[in-house]
Structures are given as structure tokens and as C-alpha cells.
Image (cartoon, rainbow, N blue to C red):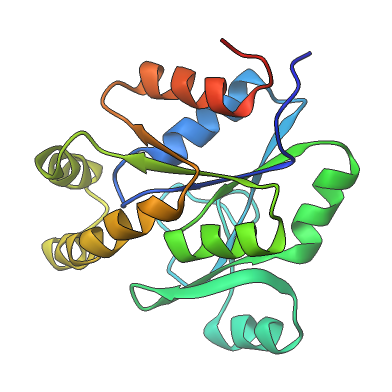
Length: 189
């Protein structure tokens, strides 16, 4: 059984950089030790997504009520939708000795670090802007306007990467996963 360097690891990246795929690959490899923090959101459910598995889907009214009740570790308004991490959902995992992986935006990752200074922040970068655009178009889940909106945020996200503990370029998925393993597993060469 491997030992992880922190009970909290936050991943951020521009949309299409591959962070969600990397996080899922890690959990597949270490299912007894790693768990993905499932975020709450007000954005519409995409085809194939399931409530409580991919996200906790909430109405804007429900989300704002949860904010007032102090139920979020962090929350942000991104691309016109709310996203946040419900405290009650991660506390159970750490009590079981699991390492929680956060798949969140750059501001959310910084909030995790403020609340949990021992957290490791990893920024996943695509090899190029052109490759990022290609990946977003291949998804076929976003129209041109949404892709433009995501690209407008790109410079801000790249600027925020300097506050992260590590930057991993996801050119080849297998290499990126191995690089992340070297970062989060104790004594991994």
C-alpha cells in the first residue's frame, strides 16, 4: 500500500487540459486510498452525467442557501454557474483515512490551500493553446460561444498557475499521470 504526501490534493486546469481524466485514472489505480471530491454546481447536467457521481446538481436557490448556511469549503461563480465543495462530503473521506482529490478551478484550489495548508496544488497545462482548442472541439459538448468564453479565461488561469505547488504539462496522458504520481506518493521515484 502506498502512502500519499497529503490528505488533500487539488487539481486545476483550463477546460480541456485533461485534469478530470488524470484524476479518474489515479482513483482507478488506487481506489482504496483515493477519492474524488464531488463538487456541487448549478450548471446543467451533460449527457451521461449522474447526480451525486459527477456533481451534486443544485438549483441556484439551493446553492445560495447552502452558502448562507456555511456548508461550503469553497465556492465560485465560473462561466455563469456556481461551483463549490460541500464540507460534509469531504470530512467523511478524511476520517476514513482517504486522500481527497479536488477537481476544481484555480480560485477553488487556492481556497483549499487556505483552509488546508498541507494540501498539494497541481496545475495541469495543455501542451499548447491550439491543442486545447482541438480537445474542446472534440468533446462536442460545448458550442463555439462556450469555447470562446473558456479561452477568454485561459490567460487568467495561466497567471494563477504560479501559486500552485506543481505544474504538469499533459501532452501524453500516461506521462502526466506518472508525473502526478511522483508528486503525490511518498518516496515515489
